[in-house]
Amino acid sequence: MSYQEIYREKCCTAEEAVRFIEPGEAIVTPITPGEPPALLDALVSYEKLSGNLLYRMLPGYPVLNVEQEKIKQISIFISGYDRKAFAEGKTDLLPNHFSDIPSLIKIGTSHTERVLMATVSPMDDEGYFSLGTSVSYLGDLLDSAKTIILEVNHNMPLTLGEQNKIHISQVKALVEHDFDLPSVANPVLTEKDMKIGQTIADLIHNGDTVQIGFGSMPNAVIEYLSGHRDLGIHTEMLPDKFVDLYEQGVITNAHKNIFKGKSTATFAYGSKRLYDFMNNNEDILMLPCNITNDLRNLAQLDNLVSVNSTVEVDFLGQCNSETINGTYYSSTGGQADFAKGVRMAKNGRGIICLYSTAKNDTISKIVPMLPAGAVVSTHKNDVDMIVTEYGKADLKGKTVQGRTEALIKIAHPNFREQLTFDAVKRGFLPQKNFFMA
Image 1 (cartoon, rainbow, N blue to C red):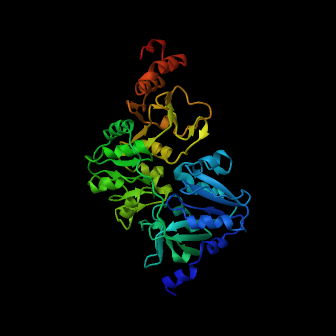
Image 2 (cartoon, rainbow, N blue to C red; image 1 turned 180 degrees about the vertical axis):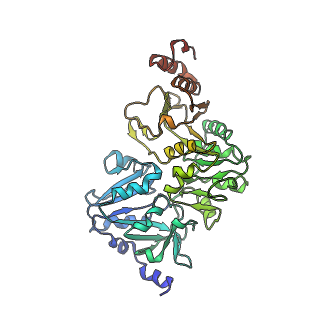
Image 3 (cartoon, one colour; image 1 turned 60 degrees about the vertical axis):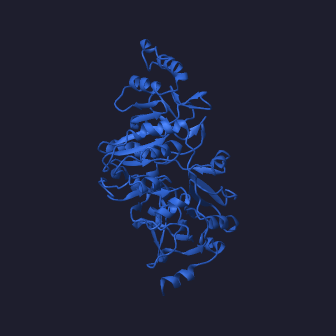
């Protein structure tokens, strides 16, 4: 039987496909835009599910309207689609470092079978589908899955990587469903973003390998990299502006010690322009997150620079990147992975950026101590440098007093005097240091 004949034999409706899922099994879907919307919709009306788990990360579609006794929904990274549901107890959250997600899912589902559902690119002549934009943790779970159900979409780019491929022989059922992949617009950059972006770009040298995180501040960095040369990319998420750097000749990956000549990532989230650029692009290698974020791999990347954002930082250098006023807003992601990884790499540099204030400059985001209920996303011992719109604070190698002084200097001017007073009161600065305005 030919691959096409096997394909047609396994092709069915979404409602028929989900019937291969047994009660109690764990269902795992990839990061947006690799989620399979037709299959997710079909789960809601599938009456035989009971005691099932559903793992989702950075979802691009709403939380399923289904009883928890039927499907317990677990978020791996909170986003706008499941933030409210988590606060209301309708979903649970799996704490993690991005690098650990495959192993954590295996631990959490060791008592049951796993079902993988994903949107994939069309099958090639050799019978393989590609996970496209969203290899992430699914790539490492393919071999141990009991059941694989696919949603085939001609808009999903075919991307390269051995752990990115699924053979038709591994597939239990598939659904054909062409739709526009979820996209995210480039953030509107503010004056603060641009100041932060300029400061960080000046810290990146020709030939460096760069990891750039999600959000407006990291995106602003790319605006100032057009004059750089021979940059390498080893990151989690490929942002939209990555295409600009390629077209400007900035990215060559010529100096990477591993994955030389390839831009490496574990997922992509941007516009159709990015997805089209990725399609069958031999310069891009999509890998599972336990490879992209593995400290042993990061340690081999000389001159690795990581750029991530946080919500607030205290005088010790502790970064809270997940909660606001004690309420979960986001998750850890790979920030801590790369914070540790750059410290192991030759000439590695870790940069964490944040606005100096919030709520129209009424709240300082540099604080004496993280407030009760705040999460420490990145440990004080793993932070190299903090950047705000007022400059950079080198923390690596500095004492508590040195860190405190450096952070107060990049705080908003309106708060420096109060922060200095608080630092003296807490013993972080000696009395004689109370002179800063």
